[in-house]
Length: 260
Length: 246
Ligand SMILES: Nc1ncnc2c1ncn2[C@@H]1O[C@H](COP(=O)(O)OP(=O)(O)OP(=O)(O)O)[C@@H](O)[C@H]1O
Ligand SMILES: [Mg+2]
Image (tube, rainbow over all chains, first blue to last red; front, side, top):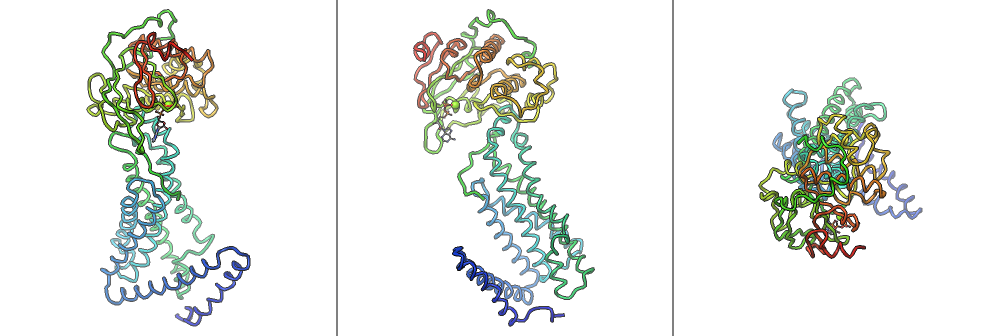
């Protein structure tokens, strides 16, 4: 089975693939040669470190270590989302909570129903997928919501001025933003297998598992990604809505922030 | 609450009366300051806004007129100072009820739905078509416009739809931020008549206007703002800013 996995010598040989990219960038003065080299080196180092850490966790810490890894992922994801949605009040706690709720609930259900085994070597990679799905949806939602609150301020305030409560004044904007944030997850689910073979399935097939077994995993993965995205986006929307308005139904001024 | 609907367009003679001079003030402001980003938008403003009369709020661009209207229906909060509505400090009133009693029509007309009738219903979901038609006519628009798509409206039509939308809620006080800035003389006059009608019905109207002849025609009382401060106030026929004309 392991004959399908590249040896370290194979990995070293694959560096040859990066060289032409650097050469082209340098020759065409794209100002990217350095970036490509650094990115490639960085990817190698990062993955080696992750591999080593995972090995340690699998062998020595068990499920507690897995939980720690997941917490770290959620915190990192929260920071990434918050960085993108700068300018939104309380972006960091909102993003972190949304990712935590979306991933936590999804993983919890998978574990409770016995769909996945409560082992570090299962929970960490599956959790990673769930967290990144939740992160994507949360980022998209918060960025769009912030921009919507900025550009649609006159319409929102016109509704508030008519005596509508904040939730109602913001509802049309929240609805369209939620839709937008969930479209990538929905599209990915709809076209799965048609455009590209998804990661989990690819991995299993490469590792020698037969395709009909591999798709079972992939189906679970698709559903859990959908759930993580939806729950995270809903949580983020709910919390952001409360952060955007004060207790006398006024849209707060949004501080200047970098465009995400 | 149903009162404003019952009145059809009135004649000018009736509107010419200047009632409300003895009614208690609708708003009383005491040293109201609004500071945003280190700038004073309102600077220790003390003033009274009569009840059941039309008050013109005039002053150069950037004087703080729109800011003052936003303070009155709590879209903006004073940094310091106190605003009372019919004797009660604003923070003690339910803000949603306050905004229904104190309608604000913003400087830029913003339409909120796809169809004119739906727009009139935003603040009043149970508004029936007949009442909606009456409201439109009060602002000088034909009733047939109810079925029109909001996307195709001209700036002046949009302004009047926004006015009708605020009237639909049945406010006691109407804050109008340059409601005729995009209107021709005839349409502006229709809105001026409407304002006088509303005042005759007992509403207090605060009218921000850059148009001094208009302020002189419509207002009973004038507040002149400059740099966030009150520089003059009094009956319309006695305030210099209006008498000089421009
Ligand atoms: N949120 C804000 N932050 C900082 N400054 C603001 C803000 N809102 C308004 N201002 C400034 O406050 C001043 C008063 O604004 P306001 O809109 O009340 O003026 P105005 O009298 O209505 O002017 P105009 O006649 O042009 O409509 C202006 O100089 C404006 O640039
Ligand atoms: Mg203004």
